[in-house]
Image 1 (cartoon, rainbow, N blue to C red):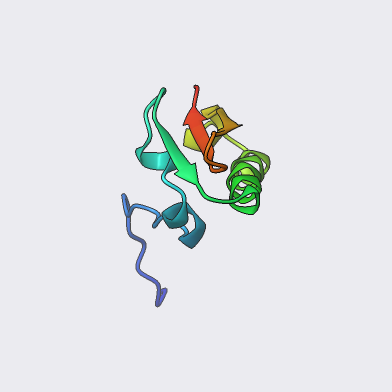
Image 2: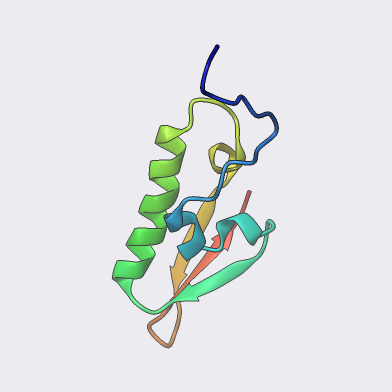
Amino acid sequence: MSDYVIEKDIPIPIDNLSKVWPFIQMKVGDSFIVKTSKERVAAISFIRMKKKRTKHKDFYSEIQIISRKQEDGTYRIWRIF
């Protein structure tokens, strides 16, 4: 007999980086602002990394984002798909 208990339907917790970026809560057309170019690159890199690691269709394999520099020097990131 095994010492392990098999459990079903236990949700996988969101990883720590997913808590940093609001992509999961965003709908198409939503946006947020980051203050620096470094934060902008980090957000874009996060999505790229998630897409590469995804071997099946999930939220991150479908998401598309775009960013633009604002007049005040900050960067706005939109979810476009």
